[in-house]
Image 1 (cartoon, rainbow over the protein chains, first blue to last red):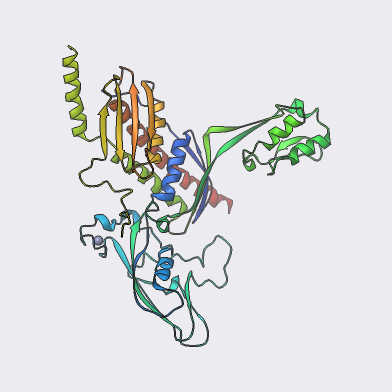
Image 2 (image 1 turned 90 degrees about the horizontal axis):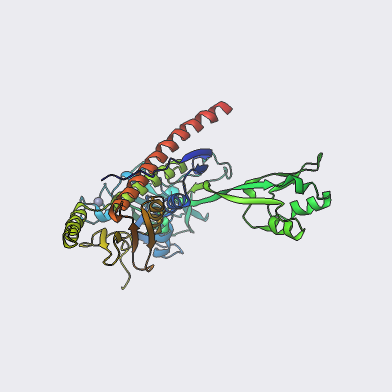
Length: 319
Length: 120
Ligand SMILES: [Zn+2]
């Protein structure tokens, strides 16, 4: 027996895309989908991060576990992560988690031999797989900081200090440890709909209009200098703080403006650590959510058991 | 020493089934689905999708305790449907919606690239 479909057909409009940043509008769906996608992007899209460190020599000022922790937090290019295996269900290495299907090996060797302080950075990590390397921010087109980029500092060494180690990077998800989260920030807001009661607005003096416009902590409204008309300057600057509504009431003009959140329109902001592209993060999130849904389908034996139960029930009821 | 297993939160233990189904003994067409190692992500989208089914009289989910890594979904339907049918339908509809969303996003990404090129 096949039921009627209640499927929705959401729409998307992209505003900005850069490698590690994206802003887009999601429409014609509800908050549960928007929130599920946000949650999956933060905690369930896999990346690769250093998970095991074997230290051979460490005469730096930082202790071994401190360095291991810092290495774990270095974002690695994780384009491969979706196709990679989790070490816990890799049968090629029997849970050892050190084979080519489920891990990437790194080596680091640094020694300071002069009076100049040596910065050990993510660029000193040598990977066994050229597709899995520390994220390089130096040629990022996102603008800032283009001079003197030597990667992410792990530790500083003075004369005579040395650091030699071997590290194993594995696939993981943010739910396990935040170092595996591909997301720097993922947020969404409801699109506000602002309605100005023009007739009532015209009963205000210019001073009152200015007071009203300035009552908003963010610049949502503006005043046309020529006509003296109040207009919506930036609807999305509204933080749902209700300040302008309260102001209108205090001025004895309730209903001067009406603001409501459109229940089916969301503005997403996605920022990644650089491990995967922002656009890819969203695509991966959809894929992971689909896999999760697939995993919660009822197994055929549960269905059969219930059908038998149903027949028995019908029989007992005399059907 | 007594640290819990790292992936205890998202890997279903051996011998435990991912989804189990239990009919209500007192109310007709009502049942509870127990889903192991899932949280609000799945619980809330299923609940909301079930609400759009007009044969569903009740649909709710709960995460009983933050350290019990499972959710309970309770469904009651009219005699025109059954909790199991509604549950399967909700999953199918969500799955199709996500398929649509993916192709929609990829198409928009291509359109956006063209728009960007025209600007330069
Ligand atoms: Zn392996």
